[in-house]
Image 1 (cartoon, rainbow, N blue to C red):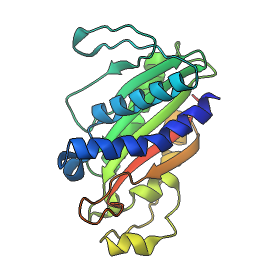
Image 2 (image 1 turned 135 degrees about the vertical axis):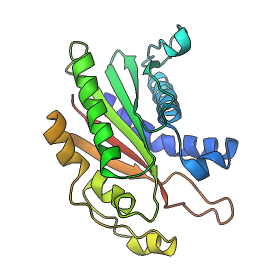
Image 3 (image 1 turned 120 degrees about the vertical axis):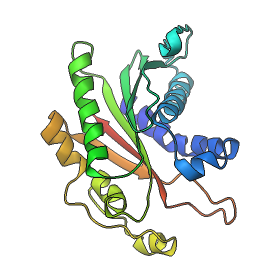
Image 4 (image 1 turned 30 degrees about the horizontal axis):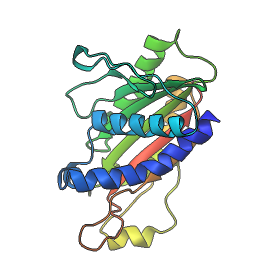
Length: 225
């Protein structure tokens, strides 16, 4: 049940991002979202979907030393001013806890990818005693694809495959290429974990043509910790 609700939230999140883009135009169109704002927005979406399904979630916010209490809340465990470092949130309900690690890929180079793996390793070490069998680890990332080869590899690196509609990407000047490594392999080698759901979306639309902006991608992966 929890897995189904998380996947539902991933699908609903695209609409949230479109609304955020209108509100914060042109910042997100130019830079993507910081790891903090990406995680906070998704935690709110998941909390709302859990509440709608009849499973209120708990929330305590550590940011800036504040604490909040209520029936439908998310917890910001870690936050940083560095935009490329991952952030960690958790959303807890009677169904279990969803640990949300977010990472803004300023670029798609090898160091940026390894930073995400390292943060997952840190999470395993820090919260090993708190992780329960029914919990879910959700990794969320975003990236604005550019002309560098590592950037053009990101979709393949994340999903393990190139999209079938490559011509649509080329029409927008995005020439995707395959990656020698994949997120799944690096996660297994570095953390001993295997994702059972890897997905990516293109939530932005052009303000001029209203077409999907294929240069901007968000990445989602569900993992049994």
